[in-house]
Amino acid sequence: MKYKVGYIDEDSLEVAKYEKDLRAYFEVIGYDIKKGLPLADLINQVYQSDIDLLMIDYLMVDKGILIYNGDEVARAFEEIKPRFPIVIFTHEQNQAFPHVDNPFNICDKAEVKDDTIRFVTKLSKLIEQYKGFVSKRKDLINKLLDKGEKEGLSPQEKHELLEAQLELNNLDKRSTEVPLQLLTDKKLEDISKTTKDAEAFLESLIKKNKK
Image (cartoon, rainbow, N blue to C red):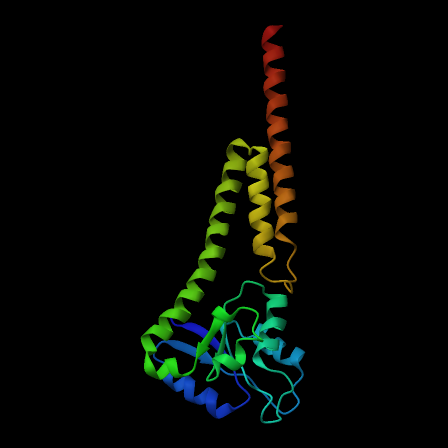
């Protein structure tokens, strides 16, 4: 299954060009960009597109279609999904460098033609790094919850559990789900209650045997 890469460019021909160049490796998703499109509306399109990585053209104000460049789009989307993999795509790295928060995320458009495999590998690694971050924390959460149900958790383990779920929850500030850490708190309360009930039951058996 191919990763889905969203590509923001005010020029639909550019989107079609790179969709063609990269279609063997990724499913490239374009967006409906019209003159004067508000940044918030563009961000909503991206948020709803279920992508694995976002690629943004840097210079988008030169044709008078949009009033913001790629660095502003990246910043706005990172407010919602802070760790999400984003690439600033440009022919003019020196122009973009002073304005982009993370210059390591800048990729030269020429790289797609000059060294396609290197470019594809770079994007794939960014996606896999993000997915790995999520996966490790989910695995830790499942492991600790399972242990908690069976034998209880130490204060340190409870802290690790809440911290891991808070990190996952903070990956998407717009999520309408019940905060994961609150669910964990409830789960831990249930575990604690079960443990106390079991201890009380054992204590009653011991007292009964002593009579």
